[in-house]
Amino acid sequence: MNKKIVVAIILGFIFLTACEKDNEQEANDAVQSEESFHTTIVGGRVGGAWSVFAEGIAESIRRENEGAIITVEPGGIVENPLAVATGIVPYGLSYAMTSYAAYSGEEPYDQPYEDIRAVSVVIPANYYQFIIAADVPYNSFEELIELKAPIRLAVDQKGAAGEIITRKVLQAYGISYDDIIAWGGSVDYLSGSKTFEMMADNRIDASGDAVSAPSSDIMEASALMRLKLLELDEHVIERVSEKLGMDAGTINASAYSFLQEDIATVSTPAILIANKEVPEEEVYQITKAIYENFDYLRTVHKEFYNLSADNIMKVGNVPLHPGAEKFFREKGLLP
Image (cartoon, rainbow, N blue to C red; front, side):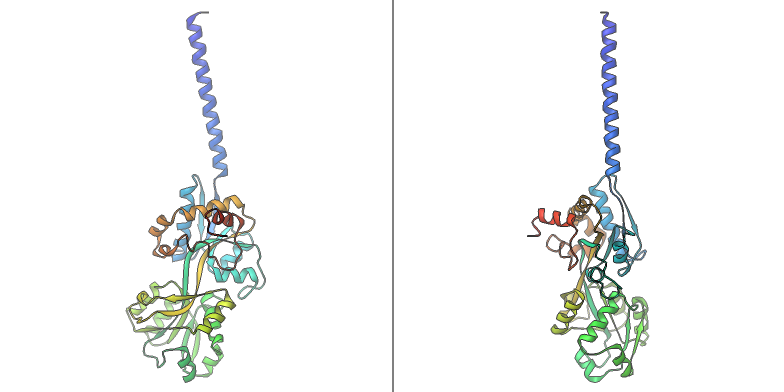
């Protein structure tokens, strides 16, 4: 056979083989693309800390899963468990407390939403903080009640997490909003920023909410006025924790310049939740992505500095999603 023909055949064979490999690679890439995550996480209001938390989690997933498309949408602490449980979105952020309230059908939810599953802790602790103006004539809940002080109290919107905790704390001490009003006080439902604005104008005496410690709102307010933080009695901590699925917590004196000692209170973590129908392997990979990106998350927000292998699985009373449970067992974080 002519050598030129042989060479041409060999070159043609090489060319066809290369084309087949390219086609095979393109097919593999297409399959990989189809298998990449394309999902949604609801966080908090636009520009707020919770939207930053959600975007940090989303970017962690993208970093570990090439081609992943993770959309972050605005939401709310109370609204997100309902959206996840009903399948409007697959993932969301909320308190462990509110997630369990939705799961079990407790206030502010009107029925159990049992399709909620926990994935991981995002922010290990949000502390209940009952802040009062420094010039009020009491330094404890017990003194407040003994004096029947006409306290001008501000709480979040009715049914919001902070409002529910405040109401349950007062009930654990044996008083109610009606008692405060009967003593000549008042109860107003206000946002955090409006509360501290009115406190600075001497129109509000106290406010209670579950927030990080330190809280940026409280720090800013303390620069304008003198403040005090009331401690909770240990029996009140036990009752509120049992009722709301919260934990005992301690606010370190170093959190605020106006504190002289540590403050005992209740706390709840912020967690990532998922609908139970989300595939096990997907949740496994998302849990793994969060676990593998602690260092990155600490560059996103200072609240992530407290997230670690020791507490990432401490999601409260909501059942773990099987995908998350599988990952935590592999890491030896669960029995």
